[in-house]
Amino acid sequence: MSHLLVTPPSHLYKSPQRGIALLITLVILALLAVFMTEFSFETKLETRGIQNYQASFKARNAVKSMFKAVLEGLKGQNEVKFFRVYLQGLQYNFSEFSGNDCTLLNPCKPVKLIAGVIADFPDVIFYTPYIRPIDHLFNLNRIRKNNPGTPEDLDLHNQFVNILKNMKSVSGQVSLGISSIDRIYAALFDWTDGDQEPYEMIGIEHYQDLQTEYEIKNQKLDKLSEILLIDGIAESGIPLDNSQSGPGNWKNYFTVFPVENRADGFEQPRINVNLATENEIVDFLMQFENQADSSTSQTFIAKAIEIGSTLKLITSGEKGKTYHSSSEIQKSLDSSPATSDLPVVAKQFFIPYSNWYEINLKTEIDNVQAEVNAFVSVVRNPDHTVEKLIIHEFLLR
Image 1: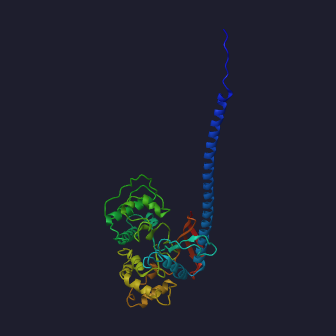
Image 2: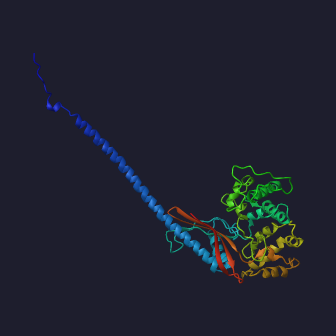
Image 3: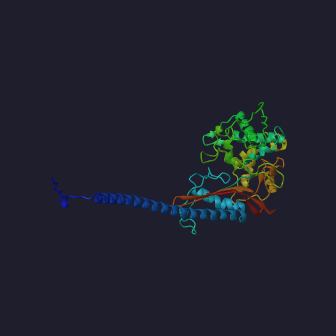
């Protein structure tokens, strides 16, 4: 018996190869769609990256040019004119705060200006410059140099206590007890003194070695922000700078630079009477209240209010007279009935020209910012002109 082979009609036959081809085609199209989407995203990302790089390049160039201009101003211009005329007018006119809140020794935070204020940088937005003298600040690295209990250490401790005790915040006086301040002073000493011996406290028996999650440095502080690692600093409630609150902060009163080292031998900070306000002069003098070093200087400090008033009568007059030497400052005090009986110690507390400055500059373009933070000092000639300028710290970001 034979079987007949029947072949189906050709229009009913479907090749499996055609289905696979269709499937492959669909997969390829899907992959192409994904690839094109990814390519488009990458292109936009790269374009934005290039734009950000260009903006960053322009902003950094602008802020570096601004920094060079500031250095030239500090070096070539009369200091009083530079601060009182150029800088003070810029800060007061554009600041969101009132002039009473901004001073030359404690400027307000940088404020954004409109684009194009400088013709050479039409697309760049500049911020008001933050430049201040810092000769009057307390150098925290001085603490590690003294032997505990010596007259030098007692005076330094007394000054430290006076600063923190009288420090004012936005809400009023900073409420920090003497025992808490003593412990902070001891912690600073133990953190930086270079050995493992604890600091014998003033007023209490002993201060044990610090127990922290960080290794004790036992070297000088390189940046003020390092104090946040020290026991008691963060707990004090005093902020590091004015980004968190107003005038009551560490930055407005303390530094880690040797601002007190001067050729005339005075190992303590001094305040620039040409640039300080009356209240700043009084507050500065009150840091030295109850020092044990000299009854002569204590007689001088007892009249802090009269001294501040007398000195600022000269600098705030219509002609804006300035002091050019320590002898002129002393002469002004001697000629005033309120201060004529004071001892001749003005040059121990006052200077007519600054030697140290903090500089913070900021620019922006297309929402990309560039910033310079620097600390510089100047070496002055006998006529107070600047012989040379030294950059101690420079950060560009």
